[in-house]
Image (cartoon, rainbow, N blue to C red; front, top):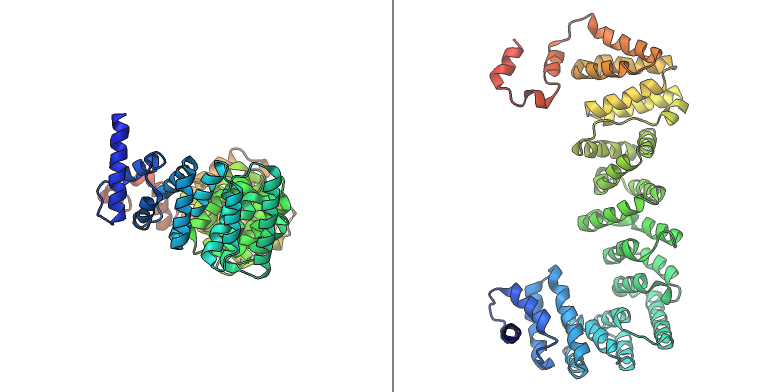
Length: 462
């Protein structure tokens, strides 16, 4: 009890300090104590209101700011008189930062049984000529606690009507908060799917943020698969400068990838086509490609094969970026889809080979991709000669360790495959590798040389 009284006294002192904007030491412990104690210390609303401007200045956008909203809700629920007084003082002040507390007050008051008066308050806010009050009024539609089904249905019917008017009159400043209301209340509002689709057409980042939250938390893809994909495709236009939003969006897509893989892949492909600079920024979805590689390697091989065979250069650039992400995640092996390569014409395969050489610089990934072509087209003499010549004149010439890779492959290959591999290895078996090959052979593994001195390396080249 002593500790409780002490905390309350310290909280009242903290309130006084905030009211006069006094420099505060140990702000966070005092702030947390305020949020815990506010409903119980019995302080009047006229002493609470002056603390908010300085308090929100100190909080800025800190994640812990939600605690003061919960405290205000509890304060209003515990004492209806104090809650009503607080509401009236804040609405009189009419400052946006203070108006944002009204939904918490209405939630507290209505949870204690005061419903009709607060419905009337919400209607006044929604029908206000001031945008700040309209925003708060719309948000209150989520917060108000209405137990009676009939009253709730009538109230949300009113909300639906007002939201439709705002859409029709293109009150774009209100579209983000309206999107939030639609995503949370969903089927309780009339024409909610149609309205969400209309709002999703807007290129407004705050609307798009709400849509990302909708896909993450509110709209079940199994129940609303068509709506889900429509909203997903609407986010194609979201500006890539919003890296934080894309981080969240990529995480959401990662969850969807597990159950609706093709929906995500269709989105990514359309996203790349949206503008010429998208391919360079495919790294925004790096986690999706790493996840797909590990979760469904055959589907990943199909994706890479199709993108390399695409006539759209954006997909080749995207492959370049994806290969870099694979390497950063210690992925050193990749094959093309044998089924697709087998059915392609020699010209198509030559095209893919050219794209591998042009856009995939890593020796490990390029050698495994080219080897998969060699095996898939083992009966196509032109292709096997082409790929064999690349191994001879480029890969082994520059990276002598590729020889060891082929030798290991030969051990588990068919007779025809062994013969082709043997022709490649034999090419170097009858000639002295150039100095650059000797160097590469010595350097075949960073782990082999990282502990050697510079003089040791020089000696080996003499």
